[in-house]
Structures are given as C-alpha cells and as structure tokens.
Amino acid sequence: MKIGTVREVSHAARDWLRKVRKAGRDVFMIDRAIAAIRRLPVVISLGAVRHAPRGCRMKIFRGAIHSLSTPAPAEPVEVCEINSLTDFDSGFARLAAMLGHAGRRPSPGELEFLNSIARRRTSYPGNIGPSDYLFLTAFVSILAPQRVVEIGTLTGFSAGIIAAALARQHGSGASCVDTIDINVECIIDRTRLSGFEIPETFPELAPLVRLHVPRNATFVLQIAKRDELEVTFIDADHRHPLPLLDLLRVAPCVRSGGWIVLHDIQLGTITRKAIEAGRNVGWEAVYGAQWLFDHWPFRKISGGNIGAVQLPHEKSALIPFALRMMSIQFETVEKYARATRRALYESLGALC
Ligand SMILES: C[S@@+](CC[C@H](N)C(=O)[O-])C[C@H]1O[C@@H](n2cnc3c(N)ncnc32)[C@H](O)[C@@H]1O
Image (cartoon, rainbow, N blue to C red):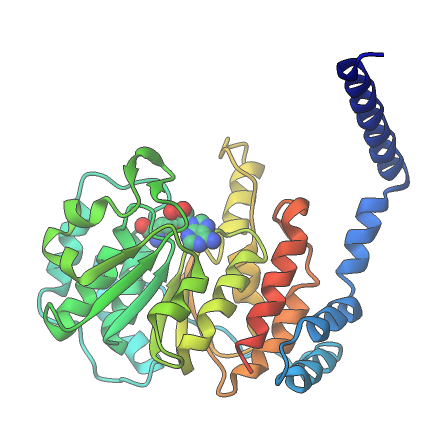
C-alpha cells in the first residue's frame, strides 16, 4: 500500500473512533456527568487549594472550607434608579447620600452635557443606555476619583461618559480613564477600531482616555497599583462566569470599600422576557452579570440594568463567594471551561 493510502486509512479509522467515542459519551451522558462533578462545591474547593500559590494556601483553604457552609444572608440591595433627565438632580442627591456624600450636587454643566448626549443622533448596539449613563455619571461625579478603569470599550461611549464626569470634577488633565478591550476592531463594526467614538463624539475629552487593546482585565495589574482604584466599570463579556473573572482580576487594584460598577445586571431577565414575548432578539439570555450582582453578599446599589457592588473590608472574603459562584453552570463553551476555571483559581491567589 502506498504511504498516502496508509495515511488516509489511518485518518479514517481515527475519525471513526472519535465518532464512536463521542456517540458513546452522548449515550451515557458522560460529558454532562463530568461537568456536574466539576461543579460540586467540594471538587471546586479542592481545585482552589491545589492551584493556590505558595504563601496563600492557608487563606484559600480557609475560604474553601467557608464556601462549603451555608452563606450568611446577603445585604439587602439599595435602589437608586435615574430614569430621565428630569430625575437627575433628585437621583443624584439620593445616590450621594447612599455613598456618604450627602449634600453633594451635580456640577455646573452636567445636565447640559447629558442633554446634549441624549440628543446625539447615533446610539450603537451594545452601548449603555440613557438610565445607565445617568447612573454612571452620578456615581463617578459623586465619588470623583482621579482615575477610572473600564473593561469593555466597544465604541468608547461609556469611556467618554466617565471621562466627562471626571473632567467636570477635576478639570481636564488631572484625571483619566483607562479603557480595556479584548478586540482591536470594534465588534459591532469590524471596519472601525474599538473606541472610535472617543475622538468623534468626545473630541475635547480624548486626551483623558487611554485605550488598551487587545487586552483583558489581567492588564489592570500592569497599569494600576494595588489598592489604588476607587471605581471601576465592568461591561465586557456577560456570560457566566466571565463577569466574575473580570471582577476578581480587577479587585486587587481596587481599594477595600471601593466600588465596581457592573452593566447589564438584568440582561438575562430582559432577554428572556423579550424571547417569551415572541421578539426575535438574535441571541440567548445570558445571566453572568445578573447572577454576580444578585448573589453579591456585600453592599450593593441597583440603578436598574446597571449597579455597583462594594468590595468588602477584607478582600479575601471574596474567596468563598467566588467558589460558590463557580458551582453555577458556566454559560461559556464547555471547551473553554477548564481554562476559565484555572483563570478563576489563579485570580483568587492575588486576593490574599
Ligand atoms: C457591551 S460592549 C461594551 C460597551 C461599552 N461599555 C459602551 O457602553 O460603550 C462589550 C465589549 O467588551 C469587549 N470584551 C469582550 N470580552 C472581553 C474581555 N474578556 N476583556 C475585555 N473586553 C472584552 C468586547 O470586545 C466589546 O467591545
């Protein structure tokens, strides 16, 4: 037999064997059984200890043991929705009181700016919506950090909104937004670059915005010091457990008591209801950000489909929470589940 023929026969035999194995796995539901075992809290705990870096094994071990007990009841969610420009002043005042800055009022020009944004002609799919940017503007203006890090740039709209709020607090030049995206080309229009709106819609704010592509949340440790940040904004991949992974990756650089704003905390429910109502939304309901917010055991404020979660005083308190979240079935492709689990374990090490 010629070498080429031998190769063809052996490839055909290999493909046939693969098919037989896959069919066998499907019949006996082996893959599903393995995935279910991997989600068992005790298996997740063992994995966390196994992947723990030297020096923080004990802390992760304690967190793992803690994750196996019944969690303490979560703190009740505080609510501050700002649904229209006419509600902005009163919503701002309520949010300011919640954040410990009672009496703070919007800066001059804030409402005018938001009005101009509401009138802008183009809103791109995937951008935060009006009630989201009213909440985000108020949140950033009230806490007025020097710097905000954002995960998920897309067109750059939310980065521009954050930069505008910072500029009104500090003047231009004294503050900045670092916005990070995994894609160089904008996912809604591959002919344009991620962040293309920053120079187009917010030209005067462009010097305040630093775009980091193609990067993910691991990059935050390279551009920020530990415990430096007071506010970050996560609006990237919403499939569970990716919002959790983004949060764990930024958490080392967020100070204790600092805030992480999460977008799309009602996306799963909103999409499910739209599908049930017969609308063709074009994608499945994903719950990653929603579950992260709903299960968050510490202080949290809901602004509707956007919300903020506060880091606990002791960041290692996130370990049992994260391990519990890992037992919820992943919404990502099973092929990547192993790598995602490993990334989650590794991110816990940075919290010790
Ligand atoms: C919902 S859009 C962000 C919208 C943007 N915040 C706005 O309101 O204008 C999500 C973005 O996250 C990016 N992304 C997805 N996965 C990511 C990851 N793991 N790390 C960083 N960015 C990611 C996508 O490329 C996309 O541009």
